[in-house]
Amino acid sequence: MNAEGARIIGAGRVASNSRQLAWAARTGLTARAVVYLLIGVLAVLVARGRSGEVDQKGALAEVISRPFGGWLVALAAVGFVGYALWRLSEAAFGVVGEGRAVGPRVQSFARALIYGFLAFSAFSLLRGSTTGQSSQQEGYAAQVMAHPGGRLVIGVAGAVVVVVGAALVVEGLRLTFMRNFSRELPPRARALVTQLGRIGTTARGLVFALSGGLVVAAAWTYDASKAGGLDGALKTLRDGPFGPTLLSLVGLGLVAFGLYGLAEARYRRV
Image 1: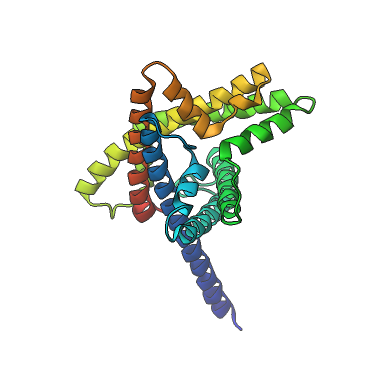
Image 2: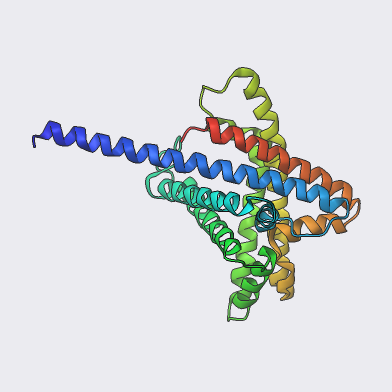
């Protein structure tokens, strides 16, 4: 085989791998969007007095209890795996539009770990697990804090989540998320997506920041029960002053993020 033939074959393999990663990215973004839609709806229902967990696993548990729910959760699990693989590829080779900058690659690696955990949670539901996501997170926090230096590790992890949440709030207010979209997005749709993204990304950031703050509090007080993740953060809102109203508004914000996420799955540059 001559050099030209090898070059053509190599280019074909690169194009094929790019298409596969793009498919994985869009499948994962769709799964993430649908889950946030469900979390937002659950948050509004909990604000009105309904019981249940308000997080990713709680949303999937709600789905699996419905007809054909097992198939839908299996599809979500595949989507989470695809999302994690896409983020791992960004961590290894660089983020689109960011070159080989270290910061975005570290963020992609962290997101890959998070969605790998969500894929694991989805598969555990399919195997019949009844352990809630918040209980799992509290258990992990307790195990880590039982070791020397464990409280410091948990505290630092919580602080990192607070910083991530603050960064999402800034991203939502500055509309920097719109740089991810291709020019194929029609002008009217772009205006709608901009507003959904502004509201949704800001709401998501606030919830992340509160969740991280609770993890820091868990480390400070040596009380793993405070490290309840997304469910713990949303229920902390519910139990505070004007709780049902605030939780309803945040729930609607997460619904907005889910709708924005569906547009991102279709039009994001990957």
